[in-house]
Image (cartoon, rainbow, N blue to C red; front, side):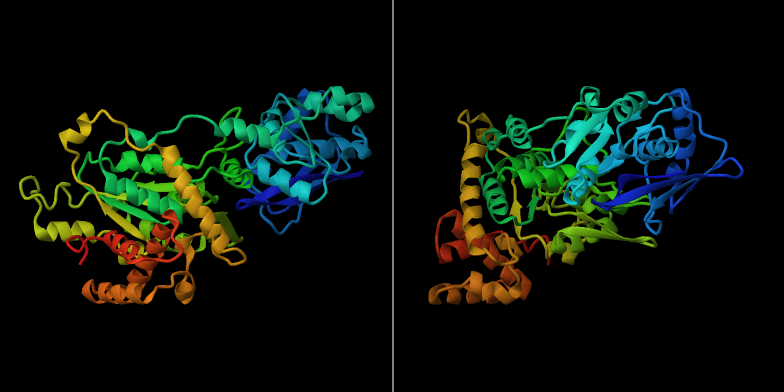
Length: 513
């Protein structure tokens, strides 16, 4: 007796179909699982056996072989329990074969037959829909998540007994496991509404707020340097509120990453706001970029389409910071293992904050107790290659009492966001049909095309290059920031004023020499 059940597995943030093949034949009673399986998948035979017994079914005293195909890809996780159980019941002729046609099963089984939620449902259901599968049977807690994908029927089952009643019934079984209905567009609009930290709550620090606006408009990476309590973290937390809202497609991308990581909250079907991820400086390299023995998305992937905020930048491990180089350039992280290479998306905006010295008050001679070598060693913890990938550096000063006492509210995030969206629209039209999306993406070969300068501007740029002793990379960085400033102002060409402001956002010479 033979049966086949369709399920799915994850490889990074993407999914692929898996066939659970069950064969029951004469021989010594045994249940074997094959197909390049991890330990938790091998343990499925114990969970499935107990769940079937408690549901009133007993496996025959025969040789049972279960193969998870393709056998050359490693399978991990507990989501194969349910398809294995269904395959066994089908091979025992207890489930009609037509009920398994074009249906994907996914879920973990408790020993009492409960069908428990699993991670990675969204990318698996999306892949199933792309391959023309008509129906997915998921754990009840994951049904809303799977129903985000249109063009496929999703049903949520709470227990093995409930699922068997559905599979063994005829047309009247529709009432046992009704299809989960979800309007992804409507849910997205409802969830996206809500109050977020607002820039109107920030008193003073106009230069830093301007730098944050420019960074958001051109998707530039930003570094803020200032003493403790100056408002660096406060400003960073408000940057997602001035970025353009997530589109539905971006929301599904982010939700897929959180689904793979198993971080979707109870009752939460999708992520509707841009992520803001702020790891502690003690984080390991593997936790930051992803990996470990069983690869999982790291913090940079959880920040996909949002902001990765690194507070106390020099306190991070040097290896962890340097591991950001490739993701910042390629917008994805590839993790190599013996079994293959896994890719996770990591298209994020990097925002960093740091003190100017170990005590935090350099160059205020009245407060700073650090020696010059101590300051240099502290700042030197941030490598040159990472600084080369940061387009804007702004300095913050301690907030004076006059700013704190100011009762008038500053410009709110919605007003700033409108300017950012207008600048992003200019960039969208400019880069239509190219591989670029934002001004920060422009490569050196296309600088003359997208950051063209007039005669007066070219002469001024040459003066900046010589007087500031710029490298070619630093010079191009100034041009890209100037292009974003011009977009914010609605200017077709870069002017001297934009070049002057862009040069102001270079890392201060007293910090990095």
